[in-house]
Amino acid sequence: MISTIFVPRGAEADAVRNAAKRARSNVRVVETGIGPLAAALAADDALAGAPIGTALVTGLCGSLSPACDVGETLFYREIVCDGGATLVLEPLLGDTLAARVPGALTGIRAFASERIVTSIANKAALAARTHADAVDMESRAVVERLQQRDVAVAVVRVASDGPADALPDLDRALDGAGGMDGLALALAMLRRPRAGVALAINGTRALRALGRSVEAVLR
Image 1 (cartoon, rainbow, N blue to C red):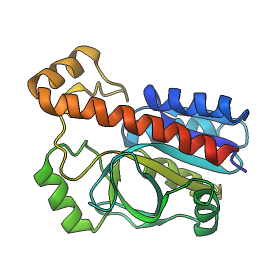
Image 2: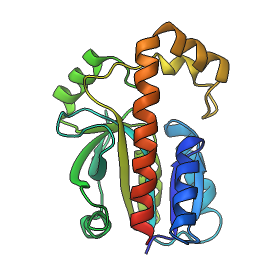
Image 3: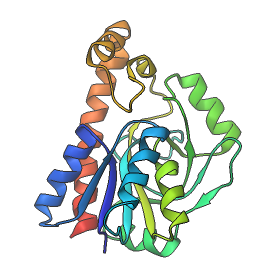
Image 4: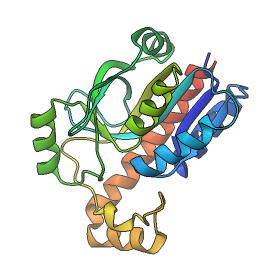
């Protein structure tokens, strides 16, 4: 059913490629950078190439709701942003895929952020203002372009941090080209070691869940 998967490059893309191998799927994996601009450029490049067919946008996300725990698989219903229209995902496609993933949560309202939401206070304020359950930086940019070309697309993300989890200042590590500067990332982790350790533990758990979920979708 899924012919193309969009996922941020790095550990998330590795988890998706390994899942595709386990599922014995020849799905096309399109790697995006981190953030909306890098994701939009990747989507534009993909659309200029071979036909995409039915697409899946995936990766990790932040949870803004206590109902969405770290490691849980979230199927988006809609994506909101500041100053833009709400993007609504095709419910039949999402529900069909979610039925393949045990314990997956559906009907998720997500917020498209231009920055990594790191503090507990900012997460709480964002949830109160937008009524969103999750937040990520890339999904909306990809979905918007695919929908403009009438490509059927679903979004499934795995929560890698919860509303009560503070993160290191990861924005400092973004290199402006959709990647992470290794030294800047290490420094950000060292500045907030407890948050860094929690991020590493939760991230490992979430990546495993991401691999299992993508494998289930592709089988």
